[in-house]
Image (cartoon, rainbow, N blue to C red; front, side):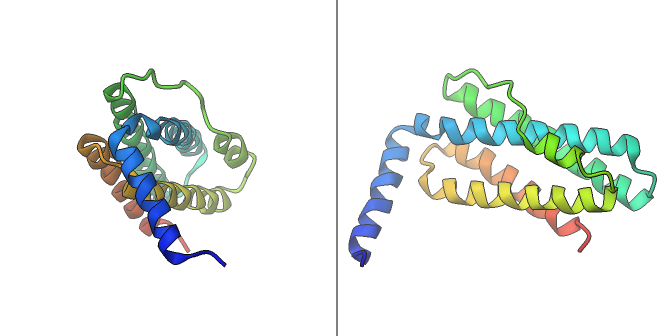
Length: 151
């Protein structure tokens, strides 16, 4: 059985480690950036196919949020002196393989919720105020967009 004090100490060590070296966030930031690029492309391509006004409105909201999130993540990486990856996440191909727009929107929402969980897992370990602020905005954008998603 795991000692709760040890688990707390390990979590504290990780927080201190990230706080003292924010560059340890680079892999997570690159992963998020690739996912956001994929999400932005999915939204743009889906907008070309969607005819329902409510779906189009949601896709435009998502597109704008994904593009803004890309800008913010790029700023974080540049702040850390790292060149942002140009990778596009596998989410794009998976989402575009879904022909039905309503089903694709449900899949997009699962992607939004993945980003929420991913950022929530990194925030406690983020000691850099600028990166924390940017991640909090990206988190809020995804929370709002997920709330707009159809059930």
